[in-house]
Image (cartoon, rainbow, N blue to C red; front, side, top):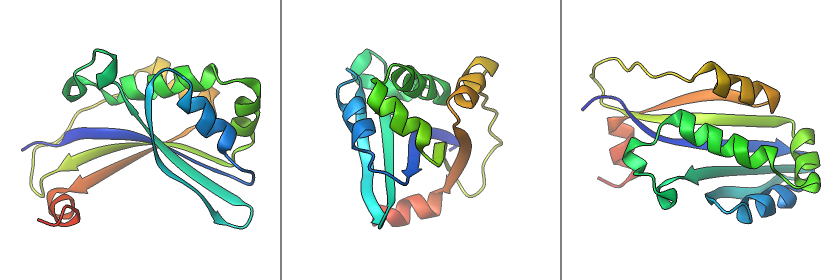
Length: 143
């Protein structure tokens, strides 16, 4: 098995509640999962979201990281003013591209185009990449 793309998570942290952002994702007309939503300590709010494009006529196995990142960017740029104001005040905004890998596998060549990277910069979003080794993926599933 080669390295395969799994998902893109959007992770945000703010000194204020993130309800307006969660609500904006809920009404955007796209399939967005709330992976985590909590006040992790007094005055520090954290949330993570995942986009699912398979409900939009896309075969999820052929969806790229760039498509999912652009879906997030489309939604964020169309946020209502209250959600966008909360977004702009977040102190951490990260998209994390996840890949699954065997412990010994061929190299992966994946890319994000310049337009996608520019959109991330315009929205103040950092990029992270997480590679999940096969052993950890199976252990987390109880296998």
